[in-house]
Image 1 (tube, each protein chain N blue to C red):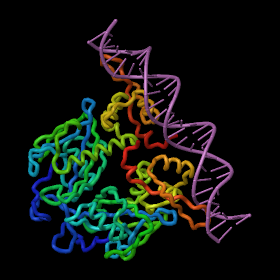
Image 2: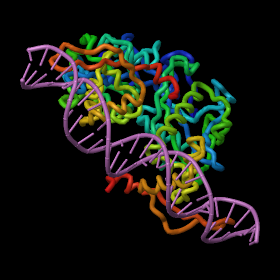
Image 3: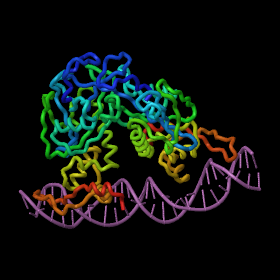
Image 4: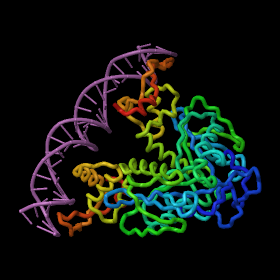
Length: 235
Length: 235
DNA sequence: CCAAAAGTGTTAAAACTACACCCATGA
DNA sequence: TCATGGGTGTAGTTTTAACACTTTTGG
């Protein structure tokens, strides 16, 4: 708290030369989903300068009447139409020249959205929105490549300890689908028997009793993630 | 990038009513050290309103000509005089009313400083600076209690996977001192033999060859943390 | 010689890895 | 009946956890 000094009580005062500076603050979103067994990323084509016509992460300015988390949720809903999904703050990037217009710091978030129930809408300043497989993404504007790298690193570490993988799936899913999520994020193959043993031993899944059939092979049992069991202390 | 729009190319434009808002941005520091085998926290007594006379974390406003990391390092140096220490961004807190004066978001950092080589200096706006054992800290101003809790959670998780504990010790240290760091952070006792086995197996320590004697018991061998071994791939 | 912390090994339990075949279904 | 993915167990290895005594020093 060394220098929180001489602040006016009004928002946005600019008169006092010794007052602290104000900077623009954005949220940028690394939105993941799973499509055709591959981890995908939502990117937008910028409709305005700077970087007009180039790809970037979705995001926008934080308003004065909303928290940063609320800004992130709002942007997420604007881009994807979803709201009840896994969203976590990633890191705050504040290099001086990261935005060519003026000093802008950005609080990056990442989100997991289930691939069904998605309606992409190009929002106001974006010319286009699309999903792209992680391995095929184009170079992004600003420092967004760095942000995506950091998000990937985070989820690769986190998925082993914290049950976030379910966020990429529908409510009910098969064990093979869940294994696909882990493989897509970790980027390599897992042993089927060991995976099932470990996941079931964690005791976070409940079998729904129904199966996913209709395909030309044996039907797979469906499971749900039990938040209750996750929050309850292990017996 | 949905709404990065209508920004002037000059810093701090305030004329356009539709321009995005600017907010004040601070860094707040959770600075840890080890004193008498206990984890300690640096707190300052605020010399100015709001919360004048109450305790808070050290921190200050981010300037336009420095990155957020630089602001954090600057504040850290101002408070403690140290610069080459472990410093990591923790989380960004942006509740609307977290500062009673105006909208202020803060990027929190935590740092590990070795307890020797410390010269505390009450900086400009602080009436006093002091170390306090984690368990005995007074309630803090703003949302700083929450920030400290979050920092504790982070380091308790991180210490098991990442070699950050060395940051609280001098360059050379005994295994018992290192074990004290782990115990102080984790808040409970570890088995001496298992601890030594695991730490030495990690292969990150090199024995210096000298011992710390002069006490009325057997002298302890001194070790150094080998950054080289940490960065090199395990053989 | 005594008090104090340094240092050291073994055993049992648990977790992890590698690995191959039969099952149920739709076409 | 066949192609396809679903489903299951075991054995070897590694990692973890529990536990107690001898050593070296200074006072």
